[in-house]
Image (tube, rainbow, N blue to C red):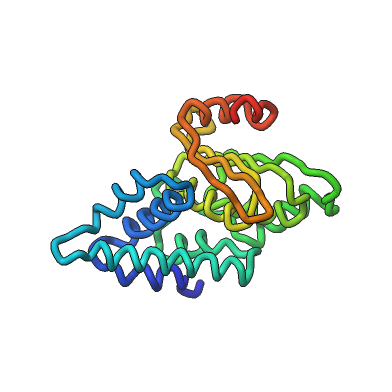
Length: 222
C-alpha cells in the first residue's frame, strides 16, 4: 500500500510517535470542526514547548487535514484515513483489529443492496464501524438523505468514521461505545446540508440512548 499524503505531513512532527500524532490529528480535526475549543487547546498543549513548536505542529496538523479533504474530493470511494492508519502499522492487532478490505466492503454493499434504491432514504447500522469503510461503500448506493448509525469501542476509529462521513456530507450518529455491553462514552451527530456537513459532539447520556434504542428512536436521542 503506498504511503499516505496525510502521514507524509504528520511525520514532520517529530516530538511524538506517529500513533500519538495521528490520534492527536484526529482529535484536533474533530474538535475544530465541532467547535470544541477546550479539547482543541488541551490537545495542542501537548506540543507546546519553550521554542513554540506547538505553532509548527498546529500548521502540520492543518496541512494534514487539508491533504485528507483533497484526497477525499479526488476520490470519495477510497477510505483515505483508514489507509493512512493501516499503512503506518497503527491498527491494534492485539485486539483483533483488522479493517475490512475496501473491495470486500464494496462486495458486501452490492450483495446487501443488489439494486440501487435511491428513491427514498434508508437507515444503515454498523455496530463495529472501524474507520467507516463499510458505510462509505453503502452510501454510494443510497439516497443522499439516508441515515447512518455507527458504533466503535476504539476512540480513534470513532473519530476516523466521523471525519470520513462528515467529508461525504452524511447524516449520522457516530457513537463511542461498546456494542456488546451497550455502554456509551460519547460521540458525534452529523447532519447533511447544502453547505456541507455539520457536526457536534453528543453527551454520554444521548450516546447511551442511541446505543440502546438505535435509529428507531433517534428523535428521542436528538
